[in-house]
Length: 415
Image (tube, rainbow, N blue to C red; front, top):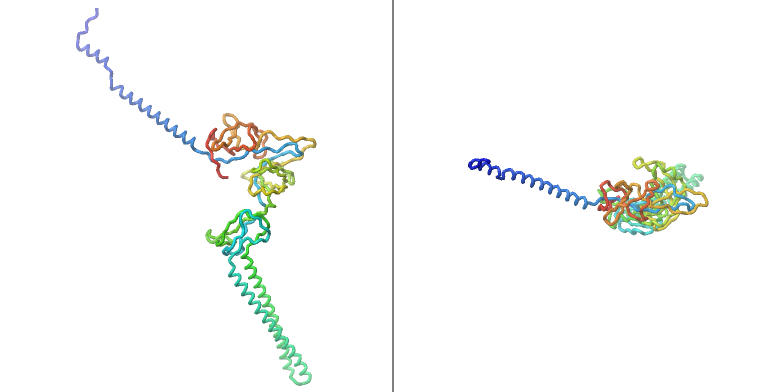
């Protein structure tokens, strides 16, 4: 039988062992709250970061998926490239002298003929100079008539003196004096005739200066920009610290429109001067314009690794406007007997095709969002690639950034 614990000190020891130590719980609870607070703060920071990324809009360039040229219709596309419609004949029309505009007779979109008056400058000074030159010319002509009359009289006097000297009525000295008078008046008449020619030149110069106050169209074309208004100062030179206009308007000869495209130098051997081509405007995807290669510019762009090619349009149409985007298909003659068949897929910029989750995708524009679309890349055509999985006319992001994912907000930026 165990001994009884009736000793007070032993009981106190046992009770002390059973008592909860509050001093150890308080630090442990404080640590738990600190860890929970740090975790909550991390969650809030992550949520803010995610919201800011989701709310940010990527600035992108947008391209339109285009249908490729048909194969087998007598010619096949060996290369496709994109470019812009340019005007071979374009001029910013300005006055040849500095002056204030008193009348502007053009508006954007107006057709003008060669030599048609486009504007008038203030011309009071030029008119005064012309009047002064006319007066000087009249005075010079009057003096010519005066010298002609005096010379006629001097010649008659000289003839009489010669008759009198044969009859011993006058001295030989009088005859010499009469002859000297004739010679002197002849020289004065010649000098005055030269003065008349000088006065005529001054009149022509004053007339030219007056004509400069009338601005005319250098060739027939269409006004695409009106750059000045009545009351503004125009000058052929840039002067006045930005307060002087250097042009009245811009004129384009629509018959000189052609296409300039940049062809990757790796494919330039497929382009032949004079070769056939088809052009399709970005604004009119279903309209194919017959064209031909005018020339290959004999220089390359080192930065872009491209060569510029000029393409002439065989069909003129008011719908074709300068600076329109255009896609050109360079054609090669095919074997006879082939039948036309469209190429499967559409053409998009090669840079639009990116990798997401080990798949080839493009980002299709849907409102303010970019949606991924899985595609199957095919044959490259210069800076374009034929892909399957898109419809003609789809708008795609030209060069998606690495951080762009499905549903990303986008906004179209400037070129």
